[in-house]
Length: 98
Length: 120
Length: 111
Image 1 (cartoon, rainbow over the protein chains, first blue to last red):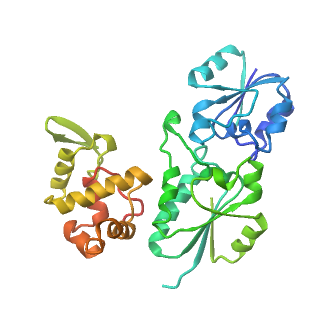
Image 2 (cartoon, rainbow over the protein chains, first blue to last red):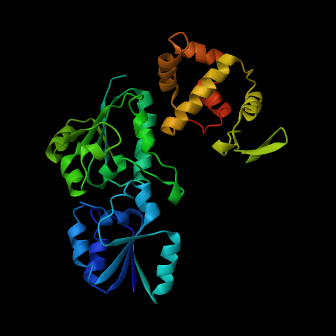
Image 3 (spheres, each protein chain N blue to C red):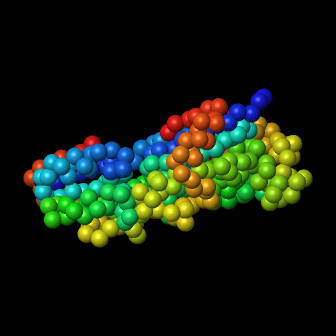
């Protein structure tokens, strides 16, 4: 399934809940969720650790807006809005961890 | 009019929610009253000052450059929590305006000295 | 919402007559906006209007009157950086009127 997370992992526990649910599939980080994918943030190691279970994506325009377009951690694929749509189409179900 | 000490405490990332922009607007409006104003940035609030916002792709007005006008408004006391920066892989060099980086405890002490705290 | 017609070009303005899209602005539209404010544009008026546009480009805001006065004084000299001079040019408020003519949004905290 596709997991969509739009909250910063350093402000809310939504990304942690998503990781704990351990569904596999993909995680798409959008809005303030993209901070999880930035190099050197305190959640980086946790996100790295699940990369065997989840494929991790982050929305490029949201990274750019926050000034982090050039600081994405390894193992995260940056997608644009068309890529967002492709992901939604690719998976049978989608959970938004609001 | 007696001068009071106002501190704006910014704890939210920009763009995901409206808090950062609202805070900045209140700071600019409040500056007309010529009070003793300072801004504290902690937790995700430090993201507000990250250099290089490019909001074209999300079609939202960016406000990074507006922090540069604070000096014209005589708002020059910007305090940034060191622990929050560290937890986000950032240093003062990553920020768009000059700030004073200090410990969370030091910011707490400054908060205690204020007449008015505005929380965002 | 209304429209303003200039040289056959029609641009959108809000209910208070402020330009809706900053990018629609040119000098002809500025002159037309000035007419709606009954301001007779001179070189001194344009100097302030252009200053405001530059300030907006740099900081993405229209400055408050106090800030405008100070910044103009810094750039154009103290004889212009005072509210008497600016109010003579724009009697109903330099920030409000000059911003409107410059095609900028109403200044934040404008009084």
